[in-house]
Length: 92
Image (cartoon, rainbow, N blue to C red):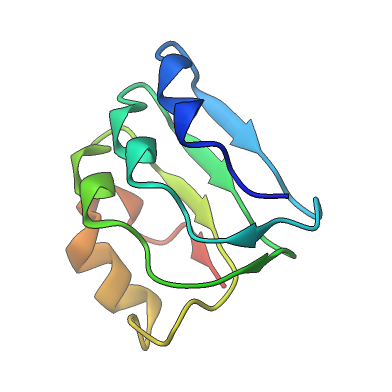
């Protein structure tokens, strides 16, 4: 399945683990509305595309685990420039 765009209704969500759920498609831009999100694990899925620019508002996000997506970020350092709150907690 896909990550539903209505995920933005979960406004109080602080941790989301969707690891190994056979997810396909893109990460919805509405993920950027989850302002309280601290941890996001999307690893071991078949997601494609890019990390949505809307996610740059997730200033509380300190752990992000994603599959390698379209090569937009060559290193975790590049991703930390995009999402500064991550520091050393990014895994591909």
